[in-house]
Length: 255
Image (cartoon, rainbow, N blue to C red; front, side, top):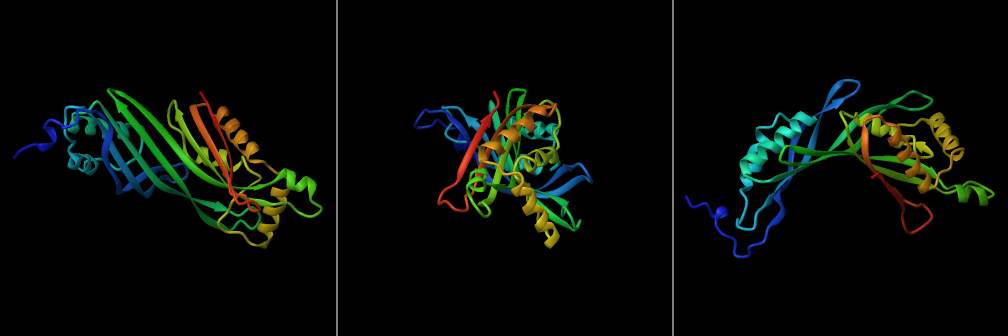
């Protein structure tokens, strides 16, 4: 049968990335407490395409994914991208996996356990034998406005913020490490289950520790600086302001 994809392109222009996205597959992720955790991932796979090729072979991405172990670590990710390079005869291969990661979390006073789900991602690009591997998390926190507290006779405005961390590291980093760094950066952590005594604790703790969005991003960056294996990071914080018709944000990038 004719291989149309390998025929000459009418417009001889190279493409940076071409591939497939919104694939769904089971994924096994390392869990610090239980060893491993089963979850589901949304997957995007792509390669570069030279100017002289009309198209790429989309089915080969799916074939490579079907042959993958579904266990997420540096070695398996490297093997997946290497397989894609070989199958597609490309110079660079890129993959991005987005998945929920669940942790059982105790309420601060009652000790009641509820499950927290965190949005996580892994992104990698392989060029030759060099793999750039990025781990990301999005963690909700609570913030209380220091300015509002200082100028108000009663209370202050408070809101939820999201700390988005991306890291590159020298060796393995637990997702839980990034979760802890993010959760410690705001006025207080967010919980899935709170009894009345827990709500009292969370309210009093957050109001005794008011934070601007600038404080949150600096606190998170400081925690990442202290991590022995993290070489590069980007922290974005979005604060969903409760008394404004806008969001506040701050960002720090290392390097």
